[in-house]
Amino acid sequence: MRRLALAVSVAFLMFGPAVVAQNVDQEAIAKRLVAAAGIHEGDLVLVFGGVRDVGLLEDIAIQTRATGAFPLLALWSQRLSHDMYAKVPERFDSQPPAMDLKLAEMLTAVISVDIESEPGALADIPAARRAASAQAGAPVGRLMMTRGVRQVNLGNGLYPTAGNATLFGISRPELEKVFWAAVAVEPSRLQAAGTALKTALGSGRELRLTGQNGTDLRMGIAARPVFVSDGFISPEEAKTGGAACSVWLPAGELYLAPVPGTAEGTVVVDRVVYQGQDILGLSMVFKAGRLVSISARGGAFEPFKALYDVAGAGKDAFALIDFGLNPALQISSGSRLQSYVPAGMVSVGIGDNTWAGGTNESAYGFTFFLPGSTVTVDGKPIVEKGVLKQ
Image (cartoon, rainbow, N blue to C red; front, side, top):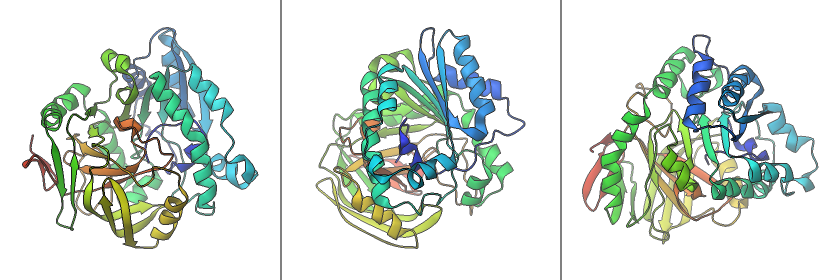
């Protein structure tokens, strides 16, 4: 699904080549990321990204060291993502990632930039191999969360590359403009946008999600922790640890894991992009918090379902609901862009939800975007046809 990891499970990341636009101040970006992670003297910081972004990664390492912290720069590539399977014996897929586990025991922070990999780059790798690798690498993320390792990511699935622009059906200059405008939104503004919504969710008992496409899902939310990714890890959040210690840029999300076993109903997703191809009309039926039926049309459903089928325990649990808060990320008419963060976007996930405050430690996770949805809490609308009401 989402989010940050050290191990070979980075092979699941499917973003285009990471190249910072020439008119963007890389040093300023690096300073922003270091500040967002709350880096301070003595920190042990992993700086992680793709070979095409080495200049930005170097600037992040330099700014990290300028605080008196100690950076370790690690690089990955599309070739590594593929050939760590294609040229490595299958028996090693389930081998515990000893190096990553050692690092996870030491690190105090991770700053990552989306890794380069063309959509479909792993299409020839059997689903069982990818699932085995994810299962082996899952303890790395769990250990970092348990230890309160602060994690900041730049990209959030939107890095302005030629590959992503093609995938989204817009020009690269337009994607660059949209991306950097969304990154530039101040954390205080996003925190303010989430305050009323957080209050409504925090005091509610039942959430209902509906859509004109047939979506109708209910879930319990009483006394569930609510988190806001505003682009900055505060000292208070750093002390809290766990799910409070991760942010993604562009920022602007509020999310929570519902009461386990309470999700009931149907979710219909008009379009899901998987391995660069569309899955259309994906329908999921949930009972007692578990996915009991899934169907769709579209060429990518078969490989999507193949990976789901071989995934481990917890894959079928309804995981979370996520609300976009960022007013600067405007999706133009006709665009194929999908993202967590546009104000009024609603996303739901299955599988792992530890990053959202849940307890399902599945090695599998996937998130689905539901633009134009309506959400009510105890009957009161908080999102109406894709528009925030708070």
